[in-house]
Image (cartoon, rainbow, N blue to C red):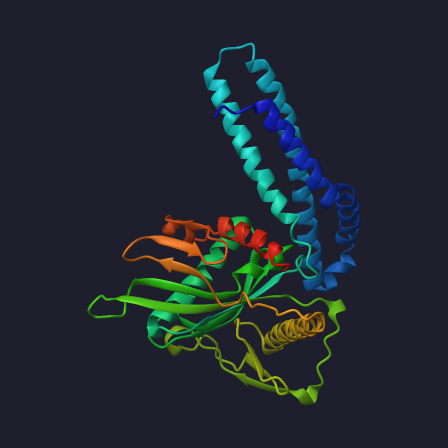
Length: 367
């Protein structure tokens, strides 16, 4: 079927206008100007964490505004190019123009995904916890592989990350890990990754080289902000300090700087041992605990509301994706149906197509 460039450019221009109506560039510019003023104030840097949040938000707004402006300009240039090609027989230029049209279409479709992230906490940083489940050493190795996927994904997008805690398994891999992805809309973008990820491959830890199925659980919650008001009385906490350790149990710190906090009423346990001071580890652990308590509170409120409405909230946080590396190569999401045979790319962090499909799917579920 022949492509109608003029018609497609018109459709993309209209779609871009709809996206701008949702994102509201004027409001974004106003916020960016205000943040620029704040970042120029030396007093802001007395609170490093707040200052970094301000600069991250400013960087994001500037990038989004540039992207919107660039897309509109490129569409206008492309329209002129196709008009000229109507009177010229230049196959090379036409091929180049069609490639640019496809690139713009892909970028506008990706930008459209952002307009679907309208949940209360979607704009926040994400806190991700990964836990090895059934499968022994293979599950621990798979949990570590999943962590690498998300860290590589963040690196590809230029997002900063911070690993708070990693508990290493005895033979290989990790028992669990907790880390933050620090980027606007990180939670809204990644919340669909919550659930059990199933891996099927030839075991590296089986002497007979048999196929092994292993599982790892991913938990994604929003990072707390100062306005959340999660008050935790001291008598509800048990705080233990211990020496950090690395793979194989070797010490990576000569002082008791690692911190474990137990919230007695709920039994929630968080740890932080990212090789900084005990004071900093305690602050990070408290932030993680507050995020987990906020999520627990949010889930309880949602459950009560559903009960009042007579609704049954179906959990989507169960097995969500299969990663099959043997006897064939295929990764498939069980909710959206999206799949790919390019397993090497996914294992190296190329998961945007899965994420975009699940964002659209979650929207249909009212989540």
